[in-house]
Image 1 (cartoon, rainbow, N blue to C red):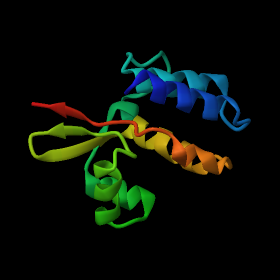
Image 2: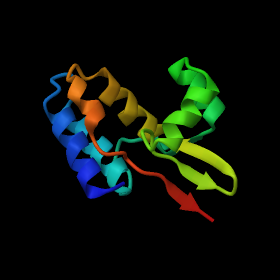
Image 3: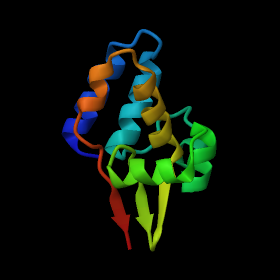
Image 4: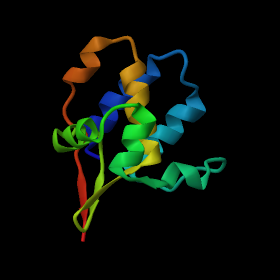
Length: 115
């Protein structure tokens, strides 16, 4: 994830009283691609299909694909398939839940390609 995107996420979540410092540290570690801190489970590193993401968000798979194509939700491309890390989905949901509507004006988080 781009450093400027990490700074935006940090700014938004640091001002959210419902996010603990431990949660914020874990989210920022995941955004930076760092190893999970002690206490974080393997479920944070789980890769989800677009169908699974759609089920979690309770939206259509087409909506998820649009979010991915617009770089609003970070993903990895493995061959021809897109996968979303569970921790990236959690960050995305927390950003959506923040009351500050200007959060949607931030730069896209970006996607990564894995050969």
